[in-house]
Length: 449
Figure 1: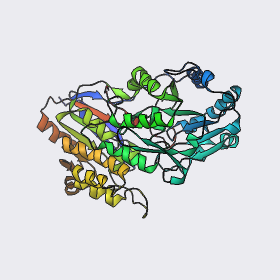
Figure 2: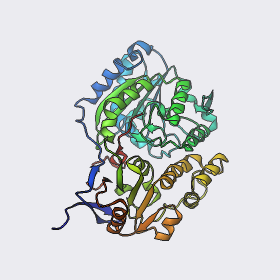
Figure 3: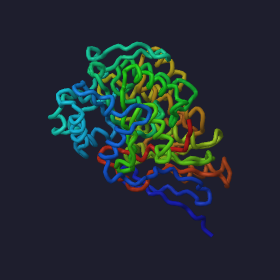
Figure 4: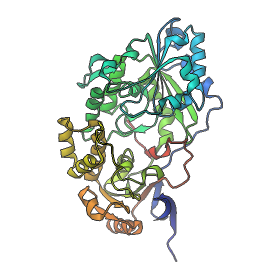
């Protein structure tokens, strides 16, 4: 009798490839869990503002005539405030009702060190017409104010416009993240509106044994971010939880630490995390938007695979990598070039750390390489791809490489035994994400802390 297989048909360099896993071994499928979207997100936001967690209501603390800094980032809430949902216009009307004029509001786009060439398009003309709006530039030292040093020795520079306000209100979204453990909360300040040197120093925190993905209170980097946000005087944070189409399913507001932890303990973990026992074999396909280049598949995905795999387990990463390591970069960029990234990854975590300590490379970019390479040094990782040769894969730290998934899985099963338990994180189904904003790939194994 033929062995029963679960077939995953995944995008693969413009075609479809089938990844087949024996049903008898398949123990867990890593998925994002959707909750019903709110019928009236705006009323939920108002209710959260007026019944916040860990701080007084905005109606009690925001004084008429105050100068307000309104922050949003580049993760969905820009479009929600602007062109997609128009919530920013309703928020301005609400602030008007509290005695805040449009001319007293500064809208600060908070991308951290991410390029944000389309921030105006995301916010839209209607919103930008009503208020002064700026996009934070972490490299513009003249636009920064120095606040001091955190207890973890991070010097804190933030955007001047933030500190010129009487009241600081921010809106963000919560989902898993490597550096901060989660998006949301005080992360809107550091790195959102922090200076480059502040971001670099904070991100050096990955040079530690801890895999910080999905950690909050147990995450030294998040605690540093939150200390910076406290120094900046963030008065209230609104955080949204979303489904796979980036529809709002829940709203939390209040003190940026208290509301963030309340969201994690209520629904955020349930949305993004999957309860499971560590697997013998963890199969990872990173999704259509990240399968062309090997380096694009690392961020969060492989750190989650480490958490879902036994210490002596095997991770199988399958993607076409038809473009090779990474897309070509423009000479003169402040960030790591494709060539630098490839050489650093080959060198391993000790050399990546050395270059980060010396500030010889972009620390933020190198931090992503560091956490991914650390997984390859702590787990056996097999690579299935068309664009990376087995010889090149070995120099990058992979234990095994092939262009045939069946061969890789057979090799893993031969090592771990015929009863090996397999977890699959395979984004094979059509993804109903908003344009240009991938969501579901952030799903990961369950983690407390």
